[in-house]
Length: 252
Image: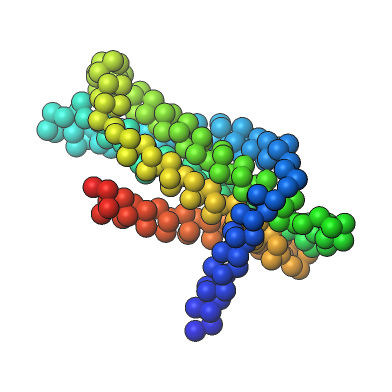
């Protein structure tokens, strides 16, 4: 019973933080430089690791499907399978998990350290709203960058699959990319983008919320950082399952 109450309280706190963040987004003054700074931290610094993960994912996906497709002489459809899988599912999910593990943890550590060292109290003393100053730039930067990183991961994954399709299976380069992009429809692409926006909101809100709840000095910062990553992972997978079911049944 206590666990259920704790879960309800946690989601209530996240929802309240979301509403407050949306309120302060439209409240002047507007500080674009802080958003750009956070976007650089989230996006530019994550390009290389996403390149590696998306590229290897495309390679592994092509290799695994080739094992079955070669039995029925359908290697040509590997390109379509890789592209649609990356666009609808693997691209947004893997990108979100990377950002949650890397940036979400950093957000919690930064705000948590400010919390235990009473810097947030100092902001309030100076009449600076912590949500406006700390949460809004990270929230907007996540909404901006995570979908862009998802598109980047999609293309890298398709290129990774192309290495196997073109150089291992002997599919022509032009044929591979034609089969990769022709079967895709707008729904495949925008399904992944919608998921990416939701994942971005989850990562930034959970990271900030855990930071504000931090207590107990350096040990508390470590616990809050771990909780932020674990909860973000769980919510990302749960949200992915929910939206996949919605898109499947409502937009077949």
